[in-house]
Length: 106
Image 1 (spheres, one colour):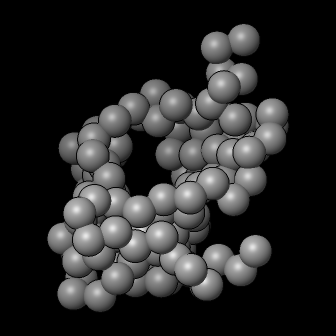
Image 2: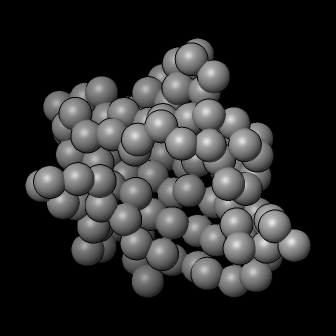
Image 3: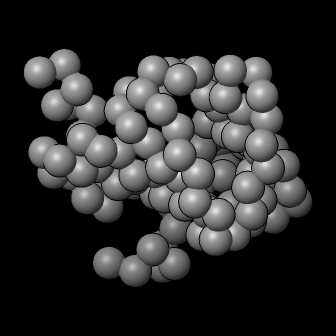
């Protein structure tokens, strides 16, 4: 799979697809058009974001950090978070979760 091909953009809401879904690791690709948002939620695992294209604002505990292409950003388990495409361009990034959230309750 090539993460730069068939990026799952959606006109109505954030696009997403699973790239890896294993017991120890979940990797999702998120695609946001200008102004689209990953709604606020608590991180359900240990998370790293890797921005592949564009610029996003990541808000953790009401503190906002701007990430650009190539930035890798760690988010702790259960941290309140949201992500917004702040540019006029499409954005895509990887959400890397270790372990897979399905294993966090075990």
